[in-house]
Image (cartoon, rainbow, N blue to C red):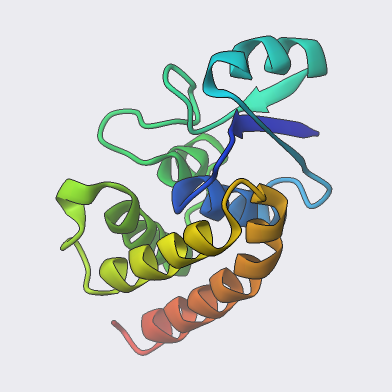
Length: 146
């Protein structure tokens, strides 16, 4: 399946591909295009739009796109829910204090954005192990009751 969003991905638009490949569509292909082109590309490529204004898998009802994907695909794993709060705080600046880890994720994600610019596929490739590790940390925290 193809998925499409705005280019120059950061926080949510990198966390979402990790979530999608791990829990929704292991063979997902991601397209990054100019914001004004997302709808046309989605229609032409039969792609699912995410993290773009008006998308079901976007910022809806106070959720970030990562959280909207979790709701839409019924992902209820407590460790994923904990990770979603971290991503939410890192992505939505007014909620940066929602959990302490959000500030760290935001700094790291922006560091990747500064280092790799518009090379969105490279950011996903490099940040995927970080999300794997953060998810493992969340699993451990949930197991310990945290």
